[in-house]
Length: 567
Image 1: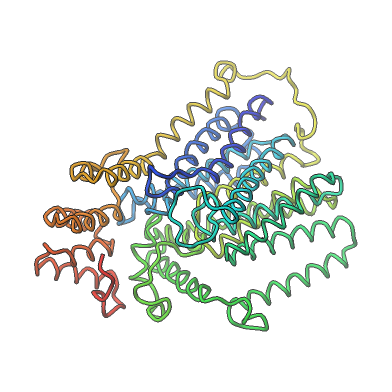
Image 2 (image 1 turned 90 degrees about the vertical axis):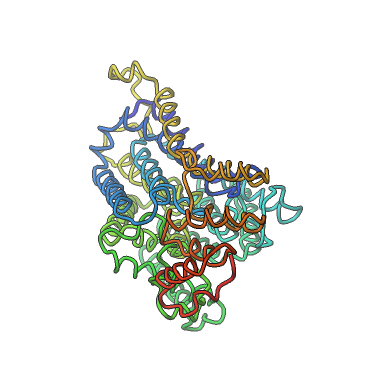
């Protein structure tokens, strides 16, 4: 078990780091203010926390949470196998597609965070993890209220004309607010909580719900409704008999099924709930399933869904959403993972989810009294899973789903009645430590891990900063320098395509042609690489024929691949 000082350092890294992953955005020096920045913070936090946990508590993790550790290790090995087997560029597999950054490094970091949290044992540690969510939540609620009523002080492009939070997207902030508000209600619903906390919760909840409504994020409503329903179950269960609790569950189940049917254009709520985006998601989900059918053992590669969407979408997708509407994500985290790595990776991920669910069930059966820490963690985790079923993976949201997975498994272990641990009691300060622990402080170990994580996770952020600087300079040499591949400047399919457009618009046709060819060589499965080659002025007839042939290869069901907006 971790000594008190070691666990204190670990939980400080986890609760402050997770909040920072959600909150951290950078503008002015990057083209993507959200994803590459969060990717960098996530990697730093993940390696710092995992370094502490493995150095000081690996035996504890192995003894108490072997199943989760083995499953997460299998998940990473299978993801690595997908990377090696993928035809997509290595940089894309590692760092993810532009605007997503959910490649192998991101999932490695999320797994490390979850495994690091398995070593937590003290009540104060679990409370601090919840505080981390609340810090991120209160800051986002305050920022969104200011942006809504006064004006957004973050200088980024906002085509949605609504609140974005620290996610750069109204759907993501809507989902996060649903997670935060549900968790806040769960924590304040404890009979022993103070009236000040309850008053603050009511005030924050009202503002947060209004912000969700203003964001027009249906997923925010769905996540909040699911979260509050779960809080209601645990409250009723702690105060009433089994008949009332069962009746509540039955009512919630019927309402939930009716709502889902309504979203599918069936039942009495269809006219109120259904949106066209539901049909679109169905096409995106099906494309992900088709990718797993095509590559059942390896998938298409980490964050490489976009390279295969046109090829493996159903013919019905050409009707709705249409031949020119494409996506690089399945809009369902589970189907994204299915597409990335095939059926075995998908099954391993589901096994991790089920492992956490089993911990929740054990805790639920073990105690009838309302435990605010457990209910808050369970509600936050469940709300993330709801979001993951209907939306795109986003690092600022995913951090809570993976962190709460490990924390819930650890909480189940820490609160076992026959477990000799320090959940509520003070730690034994006289316990002997190993020589390694005497030599290396947890702060030093965390620092070394943070440096390593920063080095591993920084390349996409570094490349984006360099590209932004080159664009602002309007200098040909600097733009070309920003396209030279290196460790801190990994190549990108979208950046190469953007460079072709930039050179073409700047009346530099030779450079446009040169980088168009480089783009097709770097990633021959990137549709836009062939599209820009087809349309640029220097493209020869032979180039156009090759480009057309490849566009038809990548979009076989579309009979008019040239009838697309010019790049």
